[in-house]
Image: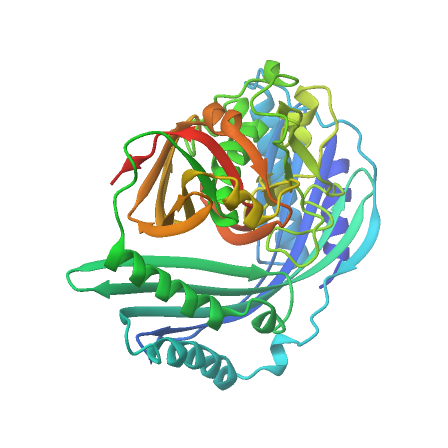
Length: 474
């Protein structure tokens, strides 16, 4: 990477009249392999290098990118971006302001204990085949569809801006995805899950995928065989970290994104029921604490600096049931008279950095899992979900359980077939009375923006209990 290219872009933009300029020079490479019902799919290989720049001129912003890194192309890119911002400023009534932020000069490399480059394509396919063989060994369970994929990539970024920041970051990504279909008689159910870590090939050891898949297949079969409908009356509901995660991501993370709150995402990914005036107001019980935190080591949504050169930090979205903070980039923070909390990311150099979640989860409580079960006289324990949906304002939420059980007199009892949580977001948070001590995070790919950017994130929390809930039946 010729870092001088990024520095040249910023210097030229300033000479041409930009009040702010930034450049992201990036190189990424990776490969991916998949197995469908034991048969290898075509492998994928990629490598890409390019630069994205943003400028502000007279309160208007422009973004441009290219993979042509010769001086003539780069110079024209900057000229075009500055001219676009100048033209936009003639009609733009809402001026963009970036508050002065701290400049950083740093190098941050997330190291691989086992480098992807030391693992051959044959070894990666063998890994997938070992997973498939383990499931086929479950002779009493019919699994007619089995899809497994593993992909690895390394992302290198050099960020420069007119505030004085010069930041190099290098991040490896390991990703494993499974989709399985379990059949019992005429009934069948599908389950999928993604595992992503910012680590090397050592992730194959830490995710422990084979025992997780075996346990999942057995529980899905049991549910198909013996599952009963959810009770008609109100019951207590205990959800696993996986279900807690989709709640955290969809009904707290997204509506607390400040660009949604200010309407930028309205025509693309929706709006938010949250308004700026709701900071400091109660939405949940005293035990509800929910954060977005990119500083966790090795997680899918982890990073040290965001794509605006801001040091990432933990954001307390809900603290003791009170709405405390939104997810901000430099633009939305300035609109509220604040500094950015480091939440701007782009999926690649060719995309504009936009406001994104990182690792979003419920903080732990004080209960042990077995204590929570024992304390519940009649309830339903939902371990995983098969589908979810939420309205454009992230207010009306629905999640359908995939692997669930009755709780009777403090003990796990018979499986429950597809119980559905159908509540408003405030109803969810105001019904939570207890959370366990152990937090678990699941990975996912969050889509947002136009054109859509799918970016790695995690979400989760501990087990928690909701009181007096009327479950839907599917």
